[in-house]
Amino acid sequence: MSLATKQTLVCWFAALALIVAALFAFVGAPGSPEGASEAIGRVFANTGIAALICWVLARRKMPPWSWVRFALVYVALVVALAAVAAAGRAHAADAILSYSVFARP
Image 1 (spheres, rainbow, N blue to C red):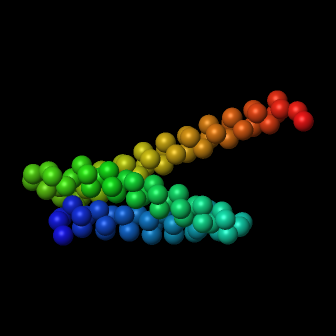
Image 2 (image 1 turned 90 degrees about the vertical axis):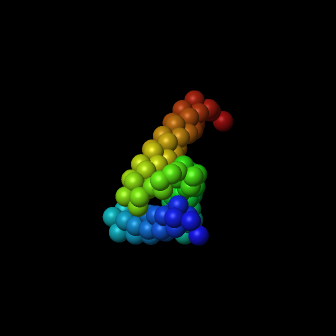
């Protein structure tokens, strides 16, 4: 197994565990099982996509990326993907709200 693959797996599992633990510790448990599964699914997808992008960037670099560099790039990707996903959800919520205000049955 290559160094980039090891770095990807370690960072992905660590980020997934930390974010899910922080989500339930600071925000609290969601009100329904569907909410909990959606939150964990979003975290799993965002951290997994960031891990895949980071692996693609790091796998052929010579010299190989250090653990610190890999982790910093990975964290930056997770934050960027979370910001893009949050902006998309906010825009979708605004569109639904404006539609429901103007649509009369």
